[in-house]
Amino acid sequence: MTPLADLGVAIALFASTNIDDVFVLIGFFSDPRYRPRQIVVGQCLGIAALVLASLAGALLSLVVPPAWLGLLGLVPVALGSRRLLALRADAEDEVGTGTASFGNALAVAGVTIANGGDNLGIYTPVFATSSAPRLLLFVAAFAVMTALWLGLAHWLVHHPALGAPIRRIGRVATPVVLIGIGAMVLVKAGTLSWVTGWASPG
Image (spheres, rainbow, N blue to C red):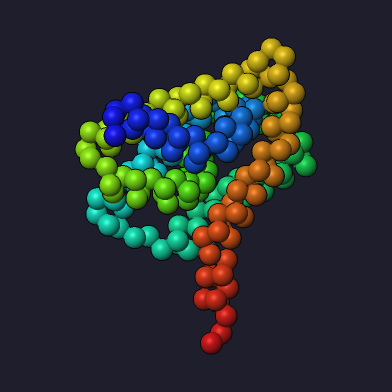
């Protein structure tokens, strides 16, 4: 393949496995408890972790049981549940703007990683059959695409006409989306079946 063709593959890979991240990022940018810097750092950490895990799987033939990986689905479920409780208690007004805590960045990273099962499943075999220059091109393209994803979500939330309704919808819809993502991860990875089977006597 030519470098241009490889670039097209990289863009298609990233877009097809991260399209739902745009909506999650919109939710985070809509939440006054999260500063933009924390969201950027968290998203970059999450994507970097997924790429590194895929590279490790490709280069070292590491195999992580899907059911174990699915336990990460508990992260978005917990975050979504906490946000639902905050909405019911009208805690938004009390919390105010975000703090400088690195915990928020880790929360964003955790959701990105938990939602990255498709990324690992698709990136690993592609990376395993790629040369070093092609891998470098993929990593560079993913970095640029991550920046574009963050920019798009931030622009939509702060758009003069679209920003206000998106922020209102985002605060209500994001908890449901997060819980849905977590539940999907737990089910698709077979984690629920694994846990129930392990807990069942005999």
